[in-house]
Image (cartoon, rainbow, N blue to C red; front, side, top):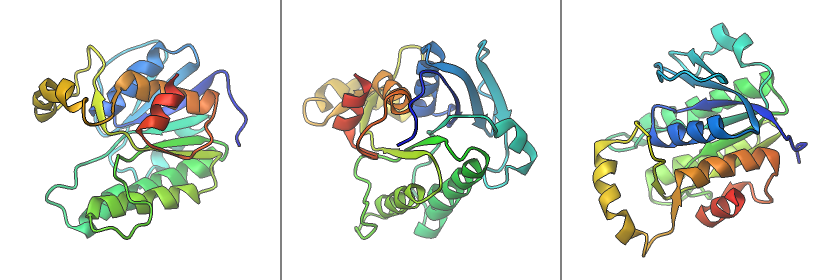
Length: 222
């Protein structure tokens, strides 16, 4: 297990999406997070004393920004795309090839890094199920666990309630949000506050499991 850190520097991806933005907001409020480097294809457009942005066009080619990625203790990889309309080969390029290339590059630059990757509820760790996206995400989880990093945590959240003030919420999700109180009666639900707090605690406290389902994320957030 990696040494626990009271304070740390973190790279966050996917902040123009709901999960990444929610995690970022939690990190900016946390005294445990000293500095945040937001890595993305387009600017997030927010300033904060401990926030720095780095724009990259291709996550599989980080050579031009390698110096800016050194000296970080953790990465919260929250970037992701829907598999809708994609073939398995197309989705694999985004959800497996790109993620592994990115994580492997960080492992070379920061070999003690704690890497937290957001997959999703229903991910198939056996890599043999019938659901395409679930198999691909399971393959990614397994491959990440084999990289020479300090620790790797795979988060599998399901329904999530956005943090107040979040901007990066898709219209479809805003509609679904109206039904969340009802859905929460039948499906386990997390808040983005819990997800972000759990990621921070993965660095400062650690957790016995490396694949975290909804109940594990909620427990780690405490």
